[in-house]
Amino acid sequence: MPTQQFKTTINCANCLRAITPALNAEPAITAWQVDTANPDKLLTVTTDLPAAQVVALVEEAGFTAQPVA
Image 1: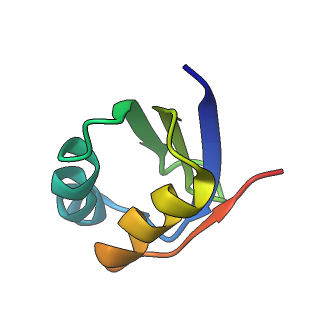
Image 2: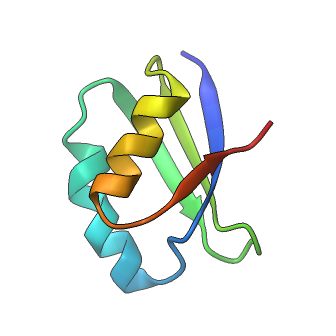
């Protein structure tokens, strides 16, 4: 299963608590993590979903995400 990375606005423990239900509820996402120590707040997602769908999930939770090329 491919891994995708996104620059996000998920930058603290409260943000992680807010995004966790949205990402955990998506059955097509097998794993995810956010590197809040990275200046780009990188979200790494293991999924077959297209990047646009991952971005939509993140945005529905109130954050922004941009695919890393």
